[in-house]
Image (tube, rainbow, N blue to C red; front, side, top):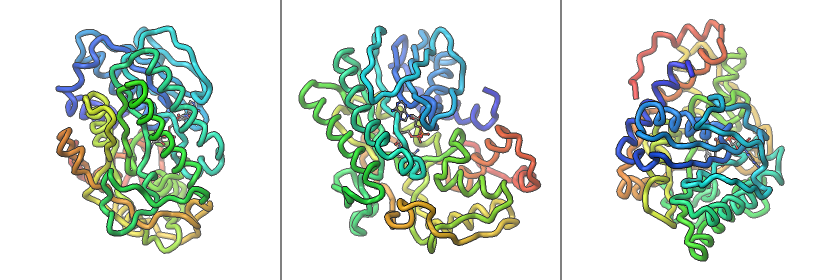
Length: 367
Ligand SMILES: NC(=O)c1ccc[n+]([C@@H]2O[C@H](COP(=O)([O-])OP(=O)(O)OC[C@H]3O[C@@H](n4cnc5c(N)ncnc54)[C@H](O)[C@@H]3O)[C@@H](O)[C@H]2O)c1
């Protein structure tokens, strides 16, 4: 790995979990969805820990079927094995397994409206297959990647939204195949905990972003930046009044590892950044500002039904639980995170746009 931003990010994550990471000494970690955005961060962090921190390296096994994932960030080696497989089909693995990170999923609305049934299959059948594996292998810990989407379009009195909020979700709407299958994935986890004592933990990430996202992923930050570099205006859907909070990858990964390596079995944790609830229009203005306002903002209608008809109005996590129980504290502000994402993209894709030079000298805090 050569990308300067990613190298700094991985080091920052490893430092922030220095007391917990020893639990991985000599263990085997199975991750599903390892070729995706968050999966790559997990693999790079575990690889960094193997090379720099752990006395005895951990073994990493990744399963991905590349339905949206493109590649792995490192090549196979004695501590890193990959399996091309659809987790919605059962799988037999001979190795002992100590930790399971169940991160396979189809996260971007653009893709989950294209792969409608596959999205349900991975969240339900894929999760069940991994829970079965966890039961057979008697794992130490299992983490399921649910989503803040389980809250649907929250009632304003439940914003910021705590884990105890039941959600306001349509079971037949344009987002239902993602939202409802994540909800059933959570129910499966809790049921395996109750019935088979599988040590499950559930995380509900709130809009995590950062290096490694596909530029054609259509989630809002890569979408805005890729349009800027194509010379287009920044596409704001509808009025741009809907809000989200954005959590940079280093903060989120710190939270995910803290949950995975904790003893809070059967618990659900929001993971995100509660400092920066921002409307899509304000986000577009922030991006324009980063480029010294050399780009325009354009208003367009949401390209798919998940945006045009069913985009939740507000999303902001209540992080009291993870802060109190696990000492989690998000650090990276939105402007810093976006500049880091842009710098990563420029280096990674060798982007030559004149706009690339605009942000070269921008001051950012290192994380
Ligand atoms: N990034 C976020 O902001 C966010 C927010 C909420 C929830 N999540 C959840 O976290 C997980 C990881 O998110 P991400 O942003 O890295 O998504 P991603 O789309 O970048 O990566 C998901 C990976 O899962 C793989 N995959 C999908 N279906 C599969 C299957 N049936 N078998 C094997 N592999 C399969 C894909 O090929 C891809 O590599 C997902 O489950 C997602 O739903 C992410």
